Image 1: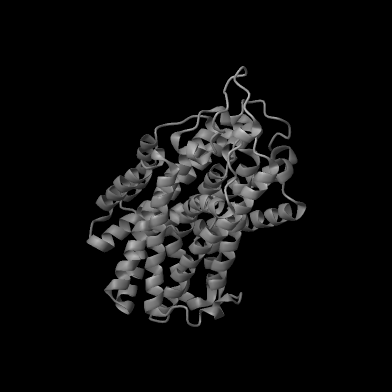
Image 2: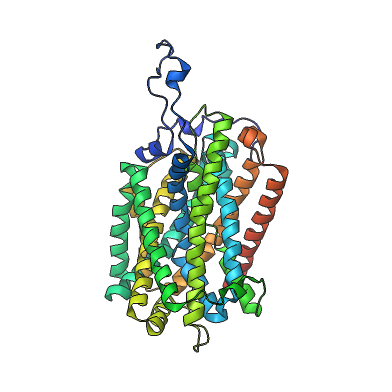
Length: 450
């Protein structure tokens, strides 16, 4: 599928980086001449100072937090809270398992950028046949738009819950706010990271408050014992695990992890260790949010009659059980989730097009194009819950097509150099890829067949 030899195309990173990408890459040493006849500068003068370990970790935490937003998007609300309202804390172990799988996948994606200095779309362009590369780009764009659908639905539902705004006008408000958010990216990745981190903090604070009010963690430990209740709980588990890994953030994290050309292997290993710690911290926070969703639904909605299955039903049930403040916290967290994940999706879309096609469009143009399908779906009056299901089905097709290139490329020494996967890592990656891909295929078959 992928060429084993060197690329016949020009290196993908010869394309001039955008201002946002320039923040991703480490700048060349100050004082180094760009011409062959320039002055010779001592190595000690051209080598940038080595950052301390805490500072390095702090720098890697920003990209990890950006990526973690995809794991607390509105699609996670539906699956996690449905699991809690139907089965109590029974499926809490599934949230933990899905989170561990996500950490492993994001580590491999980040490792790709650290080892090669290129992101996954660029590597696909360099090593895959032209027709396969174009196909991978096209499906990645479709998946990105499907992601937008879930995020727009979540944000629009949140505005409807907060202010009673009808769904379609609320979706246009979300579109405008997300456009303002992505405009921060060209001004510098640090500013974008800061805004995303703030929105993630809003999400976390909202669910921490609901957990404290409901006392949702009492008795939750029993949910860490792997087991099922019935066939429906198995199907729900399939949705929870299969829809956890988001294809667009695999591409995104490989780009945010890129190192500058000439970085020594010892320094790459040091950077990768910092990324690994940052991934554990950031996705650990995302896992806490997802677990809180499930335990809150378990403590407030389980055993109260017919289990709710829509976002507005969850909001109404939380308000009745915990009061208006908890319902407000739920709606604000949902709004922050929709806005943050929408901005991250647009940022990832820029990387997808630049890597696969070596083409770029202004980020505002991309935002306007990718927001059109979700707005059309909502304008047609599609039920929000049905729209969420539709987005998850489309995502299910994209996950294997992102994991397969990641698996193949990280196992090649010709691509990864000394950071090539060890055999045990490759075996684990194969098993994880087969598990997630199989669960998504099973989910699609059940949804389409049902």
